[in-house]
Image (cartoon, rainbow, N blue to C red; front, side, top):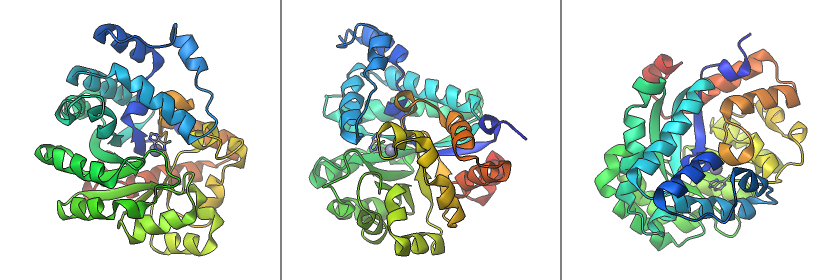
Length: 323
Ligand code: ES4
Ligand code: ZN
């Protein structure tokens, strides 16, 4: 059998800002004259003791202060693509959080042009095809999301779809009904984080109110057998992130993760890295970890890899070529 790391796969749940390794954070801080409140990379790594989603997000947003120029975003994305390629990734659908940058005075065009520069040379340089998914921060207002969509209009040729991320509880999908309708009318694909910390009802809302084609995480679907039945029947893909769930304390230990039970229930699940710089591994490492912790057999690992292409935005011919 191939090593789990080496199986060709697609990554569908990856926040590009969550690939900022401490070494690159310090290098960009020096380049941009930004002072980080950590003495060195080791002290920064020691800060990665999260108790929940919010404690992670606080650090995630803080470290973004080092990202200023289009070159910074290009370097960030290029470093991710090199690591992903080394772990068998052939196709990546990459989230970015424009509001986290525009709120600090970095124009959305700088972000998209910088990321786009790395993505444009990714097939040639790394053998990885790419798409970009623009996420709205759900703990900001619906108006701010709509302003973000409007600001992105000159760059829509670079954007495949929209997503919804950040602090989930108290910010149900229905808050963003209008901006998702507008995104759909512009021809954008639609996904949303739901059921990471939020209840199964948020997964239903993402499907019924936002019309998403994929659920990011969807972990808490398992509390609701009727919802599981629907997700199986409608073949709704779930982009699971097992290492993230452990680091953010949604699950105590990887051995308790319901991934295998979800596969056995007939759900179309994929395995992804979420924020690999923070959660202890890229997607190949994640395949390796679930193989070890959950005893997935080689056929189940191949199923996860197959699912990742089936659940991607690639059409059938593109998907076959990427595999
Ligand atoms: C995120 Cl793990 C996770 N959940 C929600 N929003 C996010 N943004 C970056 N990582
Ligand atoms: Zn995520």
